[in-house]
Image (tube, rainbow, N blue to C red; front, top):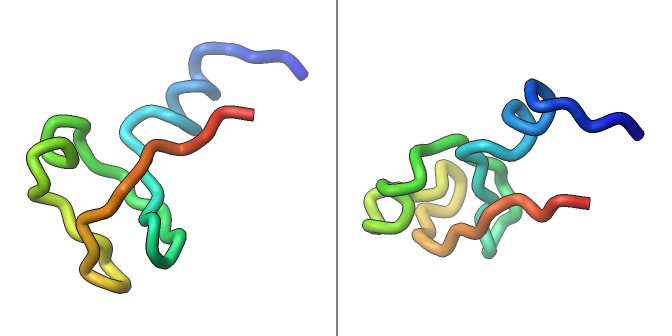
Length: 53
């Protein structure tokens, strides 16, 4: 699989996954760290980054 910067940015930059309901959310890193971002579905603050395969 060829990896190029545009695809890496689109797939992994500023994308987080809710630990409770597994929903994907695009948000700035600093807001997630500060706890200002909530999951749209379950209103949880427990978010993690997308895992790279």
